[in-house]
Amino acid sequence: MTRKIGWVGLLIPLLLQLGCGKIPEDTVGDAAEFSSDRAYVDTDWGFQVFIPDNTTWGYSSQTSYQTRASNGLPLVQVTINRVPLDGSTFRPIMTLEPRVLPRNATLESYAASLEEDYKARFMGYRSEEKRIFKIADKDAMEWTFRSVFIRSIGNRFMATFVLDGQKVYVFLGTGLSSSFPLEEYRSIAGSMEFL
Image 1 (tube, rainbow, N blue to C red):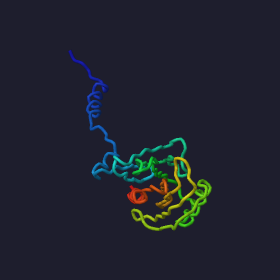
Image 2 (image 1 turned 45 degrees about the vertical axis):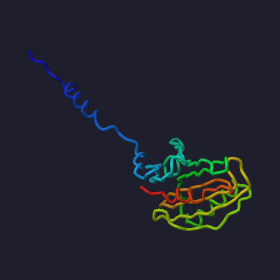
Image 3 (image 1 turned 90 degrees about the horizontal axis):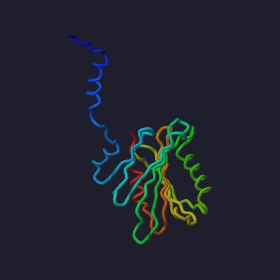
Image 4 (image 1 turned 120 degrees about the vertical axis):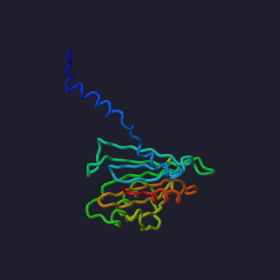
């Protein structure tokens, strides 16, 4: 007695063999090689940023695939927060938002537009000196500013943004004048890399 094996009979063993491949791993986990550092990686926007010491710093992100930027990419906000500094109950927070750089914008014109936004959002906005520098060979600008105390946000801030072609990455660190992690915020922004 002869049995015929149809194409389905041949396909089943092949599918079983292909289905038993390596299990995919979380790409963010690759940052474990940076000792206690962890990385937030966004392949859509093409960047990664490292978050220090997991006993002190935590992070979360929100991605909106239904609401998109003018370049078609999803809107993203990364929130990096710190345990309160010694003697304080206030939790410093830094946000990172990638955005589309307006056409013909320069480092200086984008800084001016951010300042207008901050003046509208933060009552008593008082800017301090701006610093132009590079992050991963990209043009960047940073400045600190103060405002009247805003509950859960504070009264001292650090603004940093980095230009990458038609994209701009905006960091905003918040805190209190009495306990403001300026160097840690600078370290986080400075850790940015482009994919």
